[in-house]
Length: 137
Image (tube, rainbow, N blue to C red; front, side):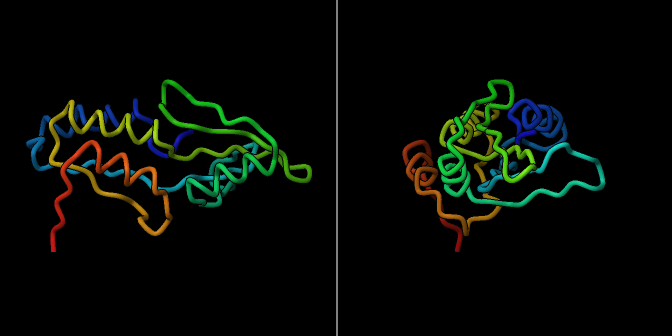
């Protein structure tokens, strides 16, 4: 499934805002994806972490289309390597924009990122267009 499916993020926010004032909540936004080997086996399967740009490059190099799950609001694709099937879920501008919409809808304080070391310039451009940037030093 997606790294942070919007429907599940919404469920967490629905609960969190009943016990924490929304102006104190930062929405965590992932800046990475997972490459899963299929079939998934709980407790056995492990995913490789990859950056968002790396995910797109992997789809291109395997000549596979990138799909978009409208429920999760997240891109994904499948490819085969050797005799192993893989499924990759990652973030793109559409999925991040959907999370930004939640920040506004729930009137949250802002957002924070998990893994800022993966370069994803489109994210920073979108963030700057959508919100004032406050740097705490």
